[in-house]
Image 1 (cartoon, rainbow, N blue to C red):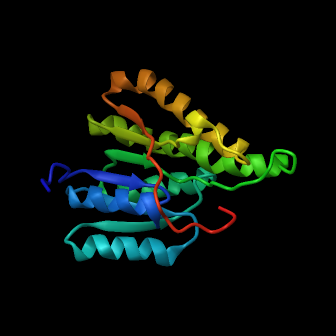
Image 2: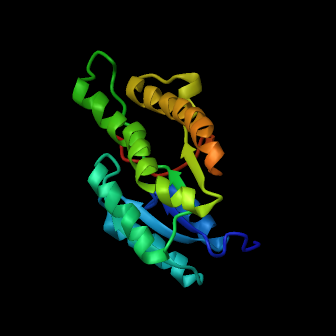
Length: 198
């Protein structure tokens, strides 16, 4: 693989496992320094960072909930302290719980929105100045097929992922003049280990 990302720094939220882990590894393979974020599982995030370092890359771990604006600000500051810049932000952190709409409480609804949709807002706001300074900043929001197809027992998840699509389109208009590219990537079905309630 060519090292087209040498000298660049990336933040990947929800990077301890599954798609987030794969994204962090491929960015590092391309030469980027990577901040590996996880909400609580330090061991998983550390394993990803060690894998990057074992392959000759540079990584740091930051544990923090993207639903918490202060934690996200601390994450952005940690990336700047470690790498001196932020060029790439991948908003991958999400929750994918299942519950029928009849049984869904507002707290259940908010839990998904707080991480999946509001988390993308917080991380983008926290990284915005650094992304502008980059001159070629990139934001990649990870969407979901269910935003387009719908899914049973996932009204909260489908709504949050549909919101990510709208958020991406709006940011592309707002931030394009600053040289920041904003895209939404919607992965297909992926076989990944997932807890029964996630």
